Amino acid sequence: MKSGKLKQLAVIILILAISLLTSGLKAQNTIIPNWKINPEKELNPNAKWLREAKWGLFTHYLVHMPSAPVPDNMTAEIWNEKVNSFQVKKFAEQLTGLKVPYFFITIGQGGGYYCTPNKTYERLFGSSNGKLSSRDLVLELAKELTSRGIKMCVYLPAVGRGESAEVQQKWREVIAEWSQRWGRLISAWWIDGAVFESSEVYKAYTEAFKSGNSNAIVSYNVGPVGMNRTQLVPVTEYEDYLAGECDYILPTCATIPGDLGKHFNINGKGDYYQGPNISGDQLHFLNFLGAWWGTGNPRFSNELVISWTRHINDHQGTVTWDLPLRDDGSIPENYYNQVKSLSEYINNKK
Image 1 (cartoon, rainbow, N blue to C red):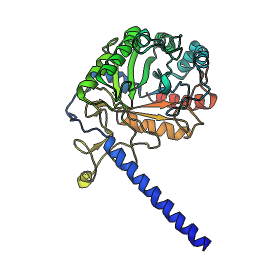
Image 2 (tube, rainbow, N blue to C red):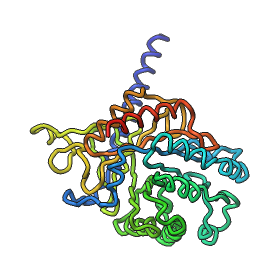
Image 3 (spheres, rainbow, N blue to C red):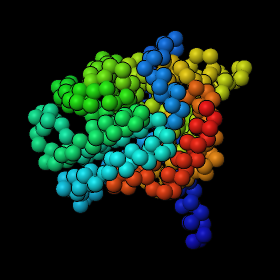
Image 4 (tube, rainbow, N blue to C red):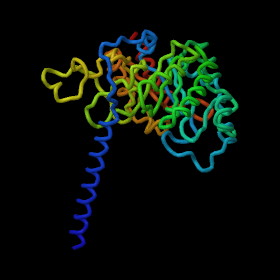
């Protein structure tokens, strides 16, 4: 009897798991936006540098694990101590030694903690009580990296998403302060969770991001490529490159042969991530080298990191790799060595 009940329980668990997986796949289908995308749209020439770079680095410099809650013991004092410990020149020397073409850092994510101050935020939303750091880490990094020929780029969540038009306008004013302060030092913005209500809202946010540098490029992310075969497509005509979040999937590039294309949700001629132009966006992917964004040990062999990056490069796309940093901004040795192997391959191939 006990064995029979255990089998019955196992079947129930399996059915629930299949149900959850199926619902997840359906959710992934619905997250792909249905705005009209123009396959004939030309690439923004300002995105050319991203294609030519072939690869770059990204880090989640936060108070918490990405997409996780803020720890109960986190305080503004702890956060500012961490931000102040970042050794900009030491980090820049590492990137220079690795010949990294560009670098993304998170301005902030959940919980309202940001590694840069903003007077407009304090005026419109009230005091951050130190959650917006007193040190402008983004500005310091941007000055140091650009002086070395490394392009500086930033990540920001879709602040104001789901809020009223008035609140969204306040957030755009906050963004404009950052953009205008940093100016031409910032080459790209990567905006996460950007499910906005209309094309006009995307346009308004894009104008805010580019208010300090009209040549900066912008991308909006609405979710990773999923377990199905739906191709990631541009979110809006007001972006310049594909956000390309991958997580645990490594997309491949190909032309779907013959009539096989009718079985897939493919735009245009049946090209599957054939760059550089993906319905108006520069082909680009973002993935993490570790177990998750900004954490864990390297999960791939050097050979896989190199070969997949090369595969995307061969189709005129670019790969950005996320890796964790220590609080002081230094790259851990195991990640440094892996990035070094990728850099040596890319630079020897040119």
